[in-house]
Picture 1 (cartoon, rainbow, N blue to C red):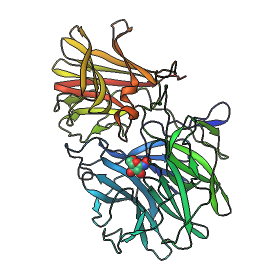
Picture 2 (cartoon, helix red, strand yellow; picture 1 turned 120 degrees about the vertical axis):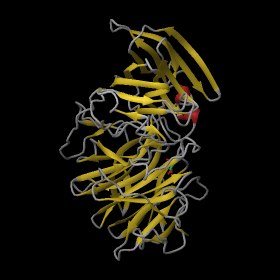
Picture 3 (tube, protein in one colour; picture 1 turned 60 degrees about the vertical axis):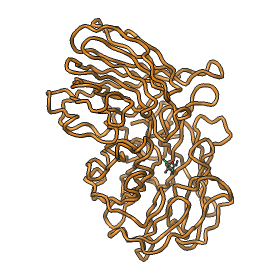
Picture 4 (cartoon, helix red, strand yellow; picture 1 turned 180 degrees about the vertical axis):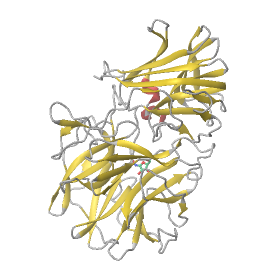
Length: 503
Ligand code: 6LW
């Protein structure tokens, strides 16, 4: 996945493109592991592995059993799983996270980050969001949360051993001090935070102390990373975590977005995971240049093969890249009913519904081509590009006809309709980045259509992408594209996702 070495010797950022926000990273020997927030999607918390910090492979989802993750139907989109911290301590991986709108702060452990992960350990005494874990020399476990406050935690029982106490909350008056990570580096304890809100004002700041509890001295150069008030193509930079490279150099992973189009700039892929080098001057971290192409790090890269364009659904288990909305009941979503096909049985009657039976993947490229072969003989279903229940475009077929729909906020409209011959049909969407031609254009166009028997693609409707952007829809997620059933039973033989060159 991404980070592909370029001919120039540079590597591309984001290293994990698409809706992969709030990265938390840890290193064990030669291996790096990274996790992200996943909000209303199940399975939750994608887990990635790398040997070089640049090339990442998804090895699982930490929360892949209903006993680990309950996302109630009345839980709005962009609630659910927020901002995990991943750490390795005492021979185990520790994952602390907030389930907003459900179980609050919870802790999971595993010996292998690919899973299985434990069932959740409730942390009733840990308030707020964005929990972090750090252990000091005498084994005390410090839990730090957004705000920023800190308490002592017994991570085995989940009991809190002290009341939360404010530590350091960033620049006076700055909004949303959050995403804390506490580290022992050299002679100091460092408290890394994000502030300024997760929109254009987002930034990363740091303070240090002699002890894990402070008093913390802010870095005179704060914020140590921000792209606010710039034309930089990577915006909203923040929510970072620090790690050492194979050669002892220091690196930061963080979230950023790539807005496109005219004013105000719309980002459609959600918040993505970027990588940037860090050096140390006078005991303070200095963040290097964050760019879409950065010089390759000074160690051998181990490129990973790009995912094949086609998923044939020939395996019993779905690849971890496939996610569903809130839950994935095995009786409604299965590869075992019709061999070589993914079968979906409808619950919710359209992508407006929180119980939609849906299997999709994150859109990870600004331009891409998506196709799926669907058999609607016994139902109605389709291909949807989804930001949330109120913001989605879809092409939907039943045994007689195919229709294109758009839902934008409270408005739902039928964009196109056409009769269909009997039999399976290839539905598709071409998503094409639309460079700004004028102040109000862009950021992309989505053309929905069907593939004719001779292979040509007939476009039934082209829609502007901005309405499926975070700037329009709000929230914390990004686009997910996938298959759904809206009535009866719908079978999908395969699903193609192919990145296309972008301008
Ligand atoms: C997360 C907070 C943030 O809890 O957004 O960008 C929130 N940072 O730290 C949701 O991801």
